[in-house]
Length: 78
Image (tube, rainbow, N blue to C red; front, side, top):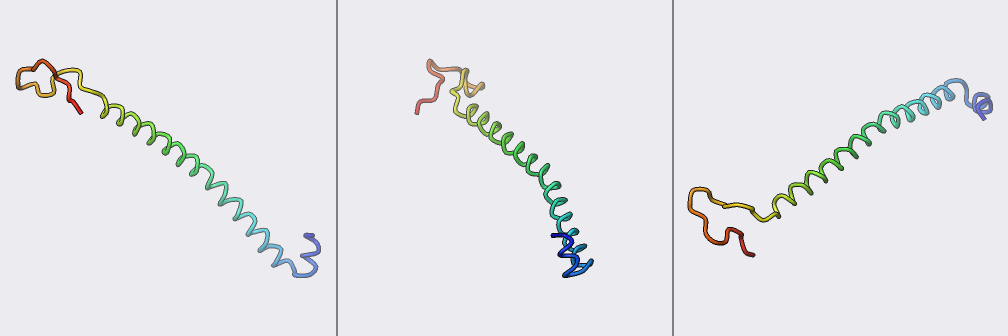
């Protein structure tokens, strides 16, 4: 196929095709680490979000306001 393209269209068309193919491969090889980095950032953000949600949903273990004396029930009722 390469020699047929070379015979029909010339060396310049074959070089343009090879250049386009090399550019295509270079772009995809450059893209792969960026995709992996985005995946790592996504997983990290999900874990931080889950940690923050757990911390915000937890009931307080001690007095909420340290400036006033504690009452018999320090927990917030929903």
